[in-house]
Image (cartoon, rainbow, N blue to C red; front, top):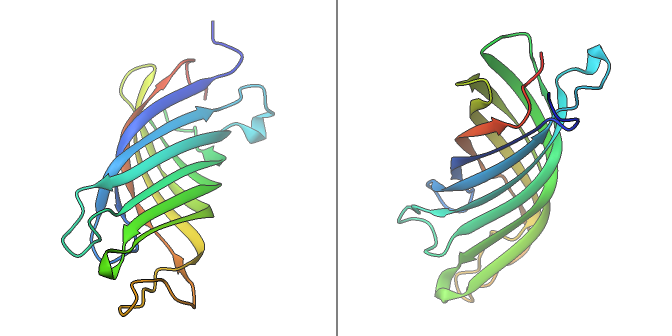
Length: 180
């Protein structure tokens, strides 16, 4: 018997272009998805998701040595459940992001923002309850001071917009059998 609240939880490895200097950084992502099975048939496939991501490993030489981007998001997704072994999906989310980095003259910066994100991907069934996920996400961090004054090492106006984007590959465990 499936539980009243069909949940899935998973983890993955992420590779992101952080939009602070050139290069990619890597880290981990955690997901929790809720897909209600009591909605009308025209809403089947809609659900809510919460995720957390810590991107701080494998920096390139052109990136600050302490570069780190952490996000926590929640939002809505829609998955097409017309296929038996795979499901494409789209999603939108809002949340909170924090970026730590070192500017010139070894001045450390930490900026936190309310962020928004859009993305999508595909899930492939491995077993009845385990699915592999490949996900793309584009984030929008408004009013971000990524322009650094080389003489002082401090950020200056005008603030820009930070747009990290990247891919995550991982697996989800569905505590209830996914319904179609």
